[in-house]
Amino acid sequence: MAHKSTRLESEGAEFLVLGHLLINGVATYKTYTNMPGYDLVATNPEHNTSARIQVKSRWTRKAGGFLIRRFDCDFVIFVRLNLDGVSNTNKAPDPDYFVFPASVVERVHRREQMPKFILKDLADYQQYLNNWALITTFLA
Image (cartoon, rainbow, N blue to C red; front, side):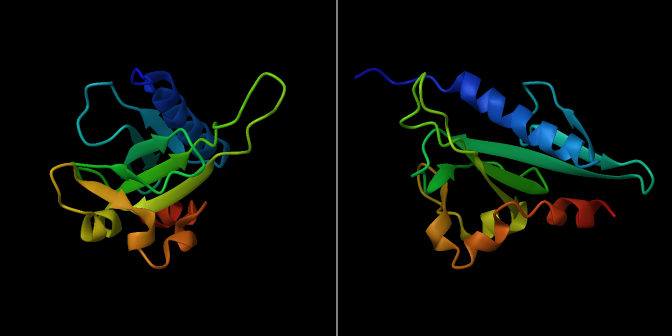
């Protein structure tokens, strides 16, 4: 079976995060595609602060983690797109957004040949689900 390209879904996840932050009043910008370490920059112009955000996404709702090598960011947002089982007649459930400080992911990620972060390696990972306040507090 051929490898499924998820490039479009990955770009889409970045725009989903970007849109969510913008709708909630956080000025956020997408970086150029070759920017290593992060995909988005959230800002607070009043306080002259910024947060570099790396977006990781997975196609399936069963995804329990993601590959990660670089930690040149302040936050890692894991987006489970929940697209498995979706057809023209059935709608996908809303994506899951886990908003992690990069230091948390770096502390518990598995340093193997293919470095990865597994949700269940972090006992309280559910507290990061839709926890956008971590970013707004960081920017304040």
